[in-house]
Length: 163
Image 1 (tube, rainbow, N blue to C red):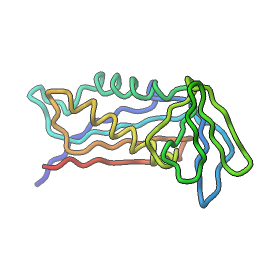
Image 2 (cartoon, rainbow, N blue to C red; image 1 turned 90 degrees about the horizontal axis):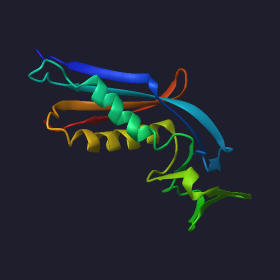
Image 3 (cartoon, rainbow, N blue to C red; image 1 turned 180 degrees about the vertical axis):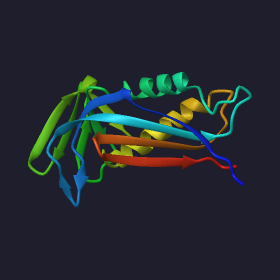
């Protein structure tokens, strides 16, 4: 018999507001924003203190990362469809006839191809994994992150650790 234990933290304080313009089917959405909610789920063995992970630590760590995204423009730096130029004080982003210039301090240039909920969940899962791996008590088998763009509409990404 396999036993599985997991903890999750979500929504409430784990939210951020951000603008983006995802690309689909060779097209680019208009610039718009979301009030994103974040869900984090960790599956693993119990520690000597009989818990999988400290809720407070997981919330603080996740919140610190998503605060970097809050009230910013999320730029898919690795886009194959957008024209992107990084200047000393601004980012210029273009698609077709449209061109936007964003002050540097308003942009988070993410190393992703698109700013879909799925890609944002993958980026956050990997950032969170790097942070959590610095803890001595790292004993989890699976890390799942969900990014909800609106109620009932979320993208998910799961990292399964090697045994």
